[in-house]
Length: 120
Image (cartoon, rainbow, N blue to C red; front, side, top):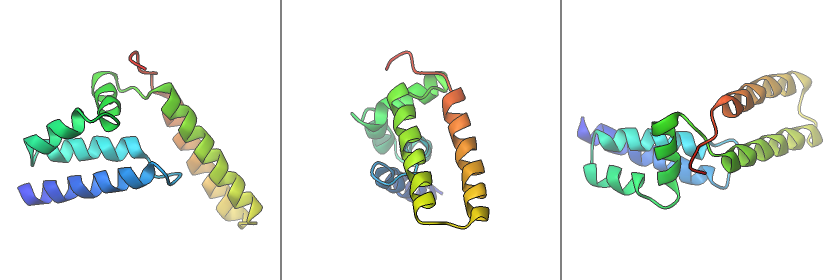
């Protein structure tokens, strides 16, 4: 079972790293999932991730308060708007646009209803 959690943690962290540069891949969610998986497979990797300069604060904020830092909220909002605008420019079918608008709106609602971190 340890190999399963280690593999899932590595995959989650990899997707989170890709999410830093690819809109709509949520870095925070995958970093939190990686920390969860590493806690079940490798104390060393878990401790490294939680104390990491970039990933650590978002994991600690979520654990302590269920919070997302305001700069992360703003970056997510800008990315989501950019992706939707690109879909409009590319002439994506109206049905797809409606589905995309519904999903992206739900994501933004979730993000903006989380508390701001007191530590940002």
